[in-house]
Length: 106
Length: 163
Image 1 (cartoon, one colour):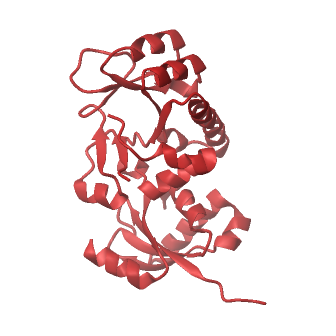
Image 2 (spheres, rainbow over the protein chains, first blue to last red):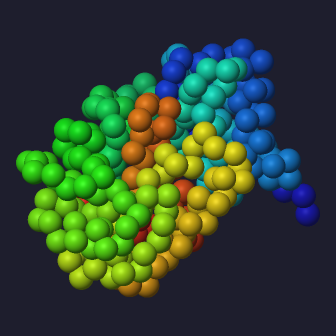
C-alpha cells in the first residue's frame, strides 16, 4: 500500500545572512547537502527549503526518519556561493507553524 | 541535561541559547588550550603527542584534560586521565575544511580515541573549538556527530560540564 510521505521540518540558522528565497541560493545549498549525503540518501531524505524566516533563518523540509542525516550534513556545509557560512539546526518539528511561532518567540 | 562547548571567541548569549548550550567557554579567557602547562589562574587543556610529557602534565592541578595532537592515540595517557579523573577532549573543528578522505581518516582516528577512552573508563568530550561562527555547531548537530563517531554511546560525549 502506498501511503503519504510524512515530513519533518528543521529550523536552520546560518552564521551569515542568506536569502533562500533566491532559487540559485537554495539549489546551491541543496547541492552542498547532496555532496555530503550522496544522491541515494538525497532521494530518501529529499530536503527542500520551504520558507525564509528573517535574514539568516529558514525552514528545511525533510522526509520523516531522515532528519538526523540532514542535521549532520548541514554541520559539514561551510560555504554557499563562495561565502564562508555555517549552518546551525535550531529545532525540529512536525509542522512549519510550530517552527514559525518558535522563531517569533525567540 | 546541560551542554557545554569551547570556542576561540565570545559567543553572544542569544546565539548560545539558540544553539542549546548552557555555557560556551572561551579559549584564552575561561580556559586555555596550551602546548605545555603554565602558571595561570584559568583551567588548562594541554595539546601534545608525547605520552610521557602528557602523563606528567596531567598531574598538574590546573590541567583539566588533554587533546591528542593529530589524534595520536596513547592508551597510557588515557589510563592516567581515567585515574586522575581528567578529560580527553576531541575537537570537532578538525573535520571541517578538509577533503572527504582526510575527514574520514581523522574521524577514524577520533573514533579510536573515543572507544579506547570508553574502554578504559576515561571521561571523553567532544568540543567544537570553533575559531569562527561558521564552525560552531548546535547541540543537536554535536549529538549527531557523536553518534556518527561511536553510535548510541555518543550521548555520553556531549552533555555535562568539564571544568
